[in-house]
Structure formats: structure tokens, C-alpha cells
Image (cartoon, rainbow, N blue to C red):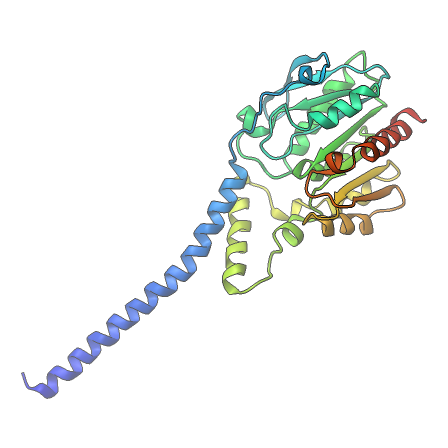
Length: 302
């Protein structure tokens, strides 16, 4: 074969090699953020149970171990008796166990409120988390349990949730009118728009976030658009809502969005200098005074 014939053959081989290399790079660029998005969603929804072993006894309170037969499965709860007939549900944040927010429970119990804390779906073996939406059902199960107790007035039940459970608390109150008062701490306003900021950033960041959204739907069976307390907070009126957020936390815009979407029944307290979940630690006396005054007015008519 002459040199003139060999050159086009080699040229075509190089072009084919370069094209394959370019395709491999393009696939890698597409695959990496997509896989990272799936891994992020999986890590959020299948987080391991975070049970720290604390109990109300560590705060000097008596309690009852309870198993609630919920609609999606049974889960363990802890009931701390009160003295004034009112009760507050403290749903678990993310994959928390029954030791979730016991410092806040202590504040309530010391002022006569019964408190019900319960374990997350992950601790109960009920499948993946949904970051707030399916967890509404467990709040409904807890509400039904309290309504059936002789030592709780069914017209005096409220809910206090933190982080993802803060979002759950708002959405649960919109679904269950029997929840007479709501305190939501540090939750997102709209997960897709706020926490995820879907559709923003450079091309690779947008791809990563879209992969999270798609993976979330595939893993949880829930549309991401349902994670939106700000879209339902207006349905809670005239029942009162208190939003508590720190001045240093990322979800503060979600608080303002909820406040703007709601009516005069919603109040917003921004704790100066507090980060995510630091409200009681940063302002213990004011936290206790505000929370108790809120529930006293809403549940006891004081």
C-alpha cells in the first residue's frame, strides 16, 4: 500500500479516537454530577437512626414507653405526663430517635404540659425519610393517640417541630385542624426553591440539583413540590403559629417566605446570634418565656 493511501486511514483512526475520547469526557461530565445527586438524596433519605439514648429521666421527669400503631407502621414513643390537661407533640427531626429535643420538652413539662416524643421512620424501620411530607402521617397518629388519653384534653393539643420536623409541623397543622397551635423552628419554606435552590447555579450545579430532585422522587415516591410549608401555612388560620429561627441560619429566607404567605395568626421570632437549633441555648430565658406564653394563650386561654 502506498504512503498516500496510508495517510487517510491513519487520519480516520485518529478522528475516531478523538471522537470516542470526547464522548467519554461528555459522559463523565454528565454522569458525575448525576451520581453525586443520587448519592446525596440517598444519604438524606436513608440516614441511619440517630438515637442518643437519653430519656426524660435524665431531666428528672417520669415517663411512659408507648408503641403507636400508625397507618404506615408501628413506632415507639415516649409520653411525659403533664398537670394542666394540655399536650404538645414533638416530632423527630430527620432520622432522630426519641431523645429528640428533650431540652425543649423539659421546658414544656416544667410548666405543666404533657409531651409526646416519638422516633423517626428510620428508627422504626418504616423505610426512607421523606424530609417532612410522609412524616405528617406520624404526627396524625400521635395526635390520635393523645386524643384517646383520659389525661389529655383533645381540644388542647399543639405541636412543636424543629428543622425538617418544623416543616412537618406546619404541614400537619394544615391537614389536622385538631392541632390547635404550632411552633416551627428552623424549617424550610419550600424545599425545592429554598433548601435546594433548584434551577440555579452553573450547568453542572443545575444538573446535580436536578439529579437530587429526580432521585428524591424515585426513592421516596413523593413529588418534591409537596415539601412546601409556605404553600399551606395560610390554611392554618385562625389557629396561631410561631416561627422561631436564628439570625445566622441558612433557612431564614424560608421563615420570611412563610411569614409573608400567612396572615395575622403567624408570628416570627428571629433569635439574634443563633444558628440552626441554637435558640434555647442562645436565649434560654426569652425562649422559655415566649414558648410558654404562646402555648398558654393558644391552648389554655391564658
